[in-house]
Image (cartoon, rainbow, N blue to C red; front, side, top):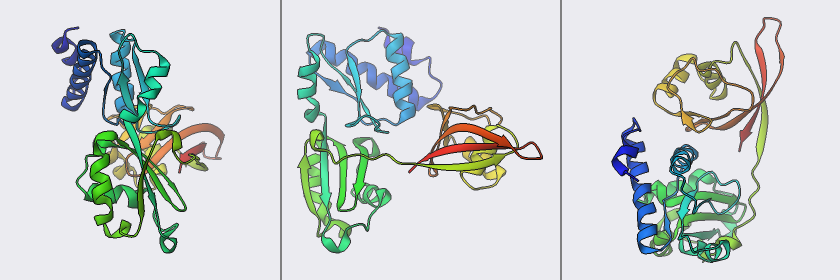
Length: 267
């Protein structure tokens, strides 16, 4: 495995660094015969690394985020002599859950952004934090295990969590995840990416084009920089800062020939 040859195939510096770091972890796993793991990755990063792993025919790995439909996941590389049972026993050495239980007077007050914003105020890197499962009484935050002691010590220094109860639980005790999708309809003049981004983000075409140029739009796990790219039924679309969507079906056309699309928005 020639690291330099593999890495130079990627145009973006951030992708080269990501792949290079993954290759180091694969090498360490083989050399030390110990489990190695990436930080949390978004869907685009997971897709990018998974394609690299498949090209190199790496077999001993799993993609794991704590629950089946987690949007942020880690890639775990494990020794060849490990079986599934050994691997499952080691998940707590990779990811743990910080449970924040709010006092009665604050129940239902905070959303995903409030919890994430608090973590960011503590100076944490986003890649150390996985999904945040919010419910009425609080939230379960999936994190890399090495930042658990820091969070136990510092979370209650934040005003919003001063009265909260902070505990650490296993991923097996994760609060039930209920992924919800809101069904909406949009009308567009064509299936061009800029048209659809404009409607979904409720902004002008000019602003939608800016989002695309700023690489804030991910179509089927790949960042798209071409605003004329055609979107198809079944495609998944993420607009950073606006949400994640799935193009479900075309339900009809207007009298002027515009497309009426049914969209699932993840909420």
